[in-house]
Image 1 (cartoon, rainbow, N blue to C red):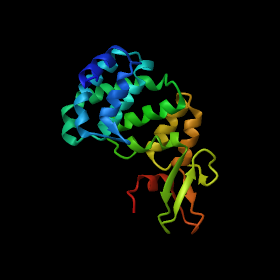
Image 2: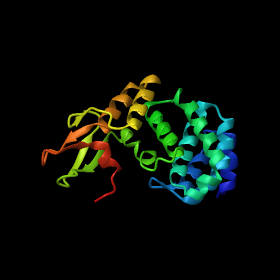
Image 3: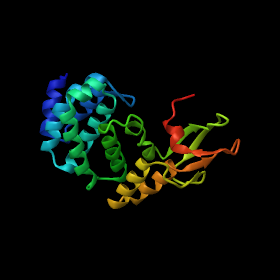
Image 4: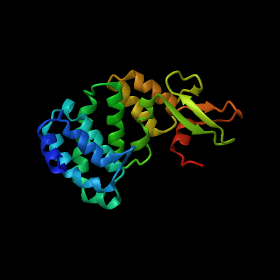
Length: 206
């Protein structure tokens, strides 16, 4: 059975090593990372710096997930490593291997920036749908982000405007389009109330 240290050694030597799967499994479970995984950040910063941008994508995304679930003490302790990882992730954005990976990279940057909502929720774009409750009548709604049938396009925050502009600048037009639905408005089919979709995605469950 491979130890974590053996996995770290193998992963550092090869960005395509199966050892990365073990490191992910040890760090994150069902979308949440163990706060103790923050100890990996210095190793991730060193390792990612040695990989080409196209080879470090998955590793920096893992780092983003770890940082967004880290406690304040760890974020302070590893602030330099987080800054390094953020810069390395920005380098990856220009050559992202797919629209899906581009969204994960954008989300990782938000995680490094300490955005505890969109550092975890931006990848709803990759799911193609979001489930929210109407803030007026509490009706459960499943919103298709691909068709825009039930959404009114818009950009409801400065963050949304920035992400949209970045997506267009780097050639990810389809991501930019979905952002306008995620950060747009919708009208509840049950009660007719119109609300900002992203605000309800970011709201804690009622």
